[in-house]
Amino acid sequence: MRKLWLIFCQTATICLAVLFVVSTLRPDLLNGNTPQSAVITTVKQMTGDSSAPRAGSYSDAAKKAMPAVVNIFTSQAVKAQQRHPLMDDPLFRYFFGDQSAEAQSQPSTNLGSGVIVSESGYILTNSHVVEAADSIEVALADTRRVIAKVVGTDPESDLAVLKIDLPKLPAITFGPPDGTRVGDVVLAIGNPFGVGQTVTMGIVSATGRSHLGINTFENFIQTDAAINPGNSGGALVDVNGHLIGINTAIYSRTPGGASLGIGFAIPVSTAKTVMEQIIKTGSVERGWIGVGVQEMTREIAESFKMPGTTRGTLITEVFRGTPADRGGMKVGDVLVAVDGKTVTDSAAMLNLIAALTPGSQTVLRVMREAKEINLKVTVGKRPKQPRKE
Image 1 (cartoon, rainbow, N blue to C red):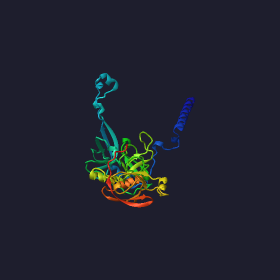
Image 2: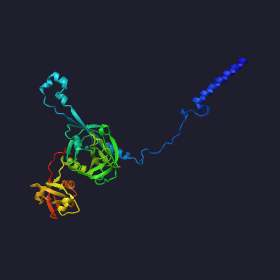
Image 3: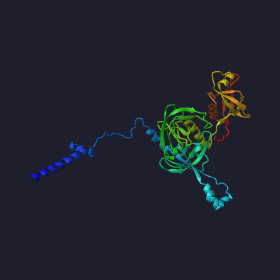
Image 4: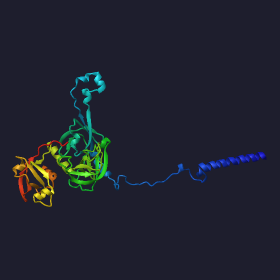
C-alpha cells in the first residue's frame, strides 16, 4: 500500500511540474487557442485594372516621357605634355611616378542627359555637356548604346543638337510654347550623379528668370524639382508627359552642386527655335543693332523726364557703322519698344532684338528729350560671342 502511495505522489508531482511549465511557456495551449504561427489572416485585395490612372500619381506622365530621355557620356583625351629628359631616369620615376605620354593621355569623362526630339534621331541637350568632347556616346532607356555626332551648338543659349542613327526611336512630345504657369506640377528626368534614370517632382516656382549670369540669353523656368549634376540636358515635363523645358542649371552652395530646390530650365519655345535653326543651318543667327545699354533706374528716369517708371533701357553707346548708327539712334536715347513690344529692361531688349531676322526692317521706339520717336532700322547679324566662363 505504501508503495502504491509513493507511485501516486510521484505521478502527481510530475503532472503538476508539466502543467507549471506549459502554463508558463505556452498558456495558449491551455486556453484551446491555435498557435500564433498557424493563424491565417484574411486581407482585402483590390481587384480591377492595375493600369488604371491612380489618384495623385504621375506615373503615366513619367512612363510617357522617360523612354525619350537619354544618358550622354562624353570623353576628352588629355593632351600629353612635352617629355622632360628626367622622365627617363628610373630614380625620378620611382619618386614622382610614371609621367610617360601614355599615362598623361588617358581620356577624361563627363556625364549628362539629353532628350530625343524626333524619330529621325535628333537629340536636344546642353552645350556645356558636349563642349570640347572628342567622343560622345548615348545610352537609351532601352539599354541600346550608340555613338552620336554633334549637329551644332549654341553656347549663348547653352543648347546643342546631336544626331544618332537607330531604328524605332521614342520621340518626346513638345508642350505648348507659352503654356507654363507658376504653380504647375512638373517632373525632371535625367541621370543625376550617374545613378541611373531618375524622376523628381516639383512645381514651377517662376518663369522668365533672367539676370542670373548663366547664359547670354536668359528666359528660364525656375523649379523646385530636384536637379543635380548629371541632369543637365534632361527633360522638364508637365503632368501629361510633354516637354516644357531643358534642365540646365541649379543654384547650390556646395562644391558638388547638390540641389537646394532652385533649378533652372530653358523653356521649350526657346529650345525649339534654336533646335530648328541648328538642324537647318548648323548654327543660330540672331538679330543685332550694335549698341551698349544700361539698366534704367528711378534717378535716370527722372532725369529723362520719365517719372514713375523704369521701363526701357538707356543707350550708352552706339557703335559706328552699325544698324543703330545708320538708323539714327543716339547716345542718351531710351529704347522703350521693339516692333511694338515693350522693352522692360536690358535682358528683354536683348531677347527682342535677337529674335529679329537679320536683314529685316524693324521699328525701334525711343524716348528722346521727353518725346517718343520711331526709328526704322535694318537688323544686322549678331557676331559670334565667346561663351561666358
